[in-house]
Length: 169
Image (cartoon, rainbow, N blue to C red; front, side):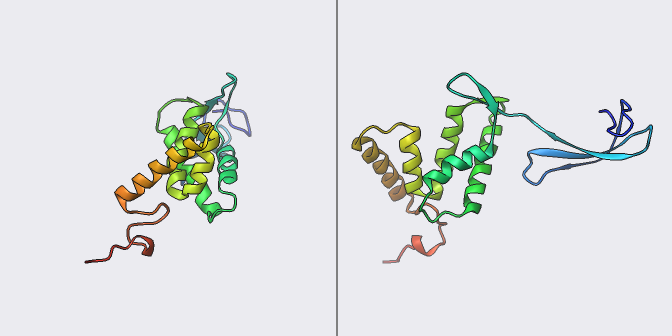
């Protein structure tokens, strides 16, 4: 690591801290030649391989754009969307690969979106999975209903919320 002040070829790490979301490491360094301190941020690179064959850096902002369109007019907050994008990025990074297919990013969006809002999930899935007929929608809705009936929990709610109360006989 070159010192940004005197261009000395070495530096000493004084302090290292992981960022709040765990995606980067912040290091305070000191140059042994001029004794000045500076900060570096280390992140791992994550690339997305597009259908065209092009590769580009992963972007939470792009995930948010796609999901925001699906959530238009739905009771979903910007905080909810930011958390969803963070979950998607964590899921992709946990795969342990420096390059992922764009299809895998879309698949990583589906589950958290379904938990957040079923209508937004259907909108996103209809575009992403290429629904071509009413039967495609009916099939997806049938699966959602079956999963809801099996768990007894409405999407977007916790087991203790008023929407999922169970009455005793």
